Length: 121
Image (cartoon, rainbow, N blue to C red; front, side, top):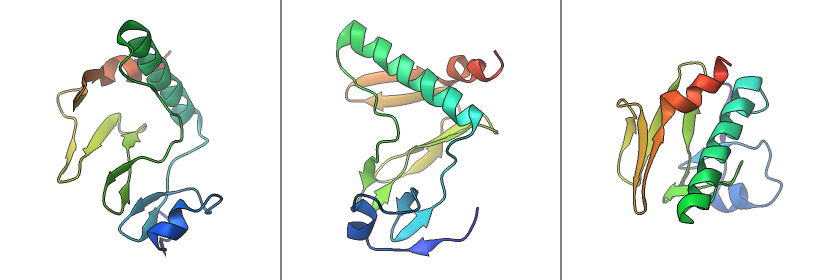
């Protein structure tokens, strides 16, 4: 990871804040964007959530959308090279070791291996 910058949350949320990064308690964190594996997985996740929405109308996918997971924390991490995903909640960070990303309300399970398979196609 490159250098880190310290900024206020207000500054981070200002339209046009550069560079476009994740944010963790005043620190800008570099994001992997623009590379082919990132683009492939972004398409797979968007398609997966679009299909869920068509079936149950419970979810909607937003590519490149900032998501606040806790006070002063905006993250959602999929590591394309390591083929792993980390789950960030307000109280804990953990790896999705069972191969599924889970939400509770609404209940959604995302099969990571199925989506990662697109990197080999």
